[in-house]
Amino acid sequence: MGVQADVSVDVQGRSAWFSGEIDLASYEALLAALSPLIQEAGDIVCDLSDVAFMDSSGIRLFVQMQRSREAGSAVILRNPAPNVERVLELTGVSAFGLRVETP
Image (cartoon, rainbow, N blue to C red; front, top):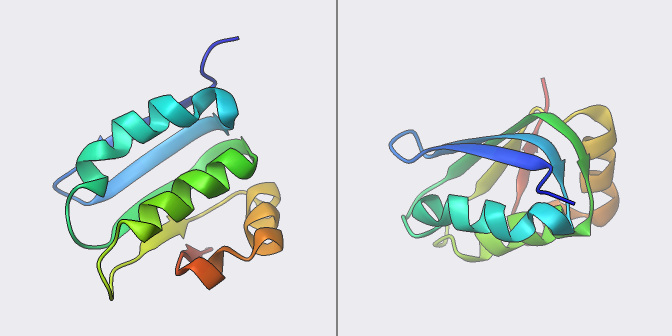
């Protein structure tokens, strides 16, 4: 089974646009693609509007990104689909400093 997710990274804009399914099969590839953003200071905006599915590997990815942030900076998860937003709510990602923004 191949990677079922994709990410487009805009290092200058401090953002990433995700699509597909964020799960164990896509975790390593996504982490590698996000490396330039993770290594730089400041907020990171992640657009999740085209993510159809996310499991605990996605939560792990975003928590790991948040832990790499300096104090006062955040990973912002923007526009998650209702099912993805529900996963984020159930897992309590805000307790890790992640911010979820919905339209």
